[in-house]
Image (tube, rainbow, N blue to C red; front, side):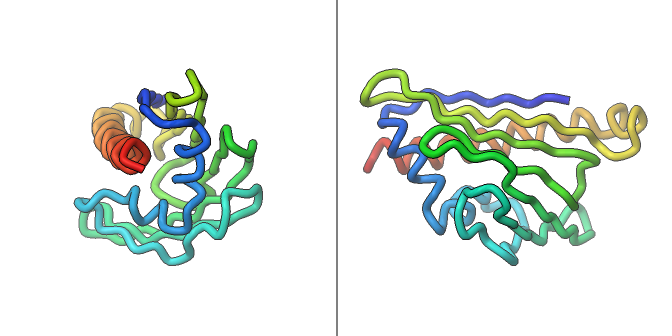
Length: 149
């Protein structure tokens, strides 16, 4: 399955990428409605960085472990979920300059729900809705931070 969110930001690409490199970026990008604890925050965006989260999904706590698997300074980084609620998850964060003062931020996610066809039929609509909600929030936070800087 595929999810893509692209937003135009009135800020240089370098500023938007630097926002994601900040030590508190993940905390700032975590929506207030999610019950999530950052157990092991990213120390960088470099390949091999591990991130561990505990998040509540319904009445249950779920551990999420992700590894950064790709990095192009100033342009892109990607993380792969190795443990969590998805059967597979590859998330690319891409910043593309448009001009010296504008850029686009794209979150490109390839994912599979657990239980194959049954998971897609039973939870596909829910996953799409939640991904849309999450990335709409994240893009608004990023835009507000970068356009006001």
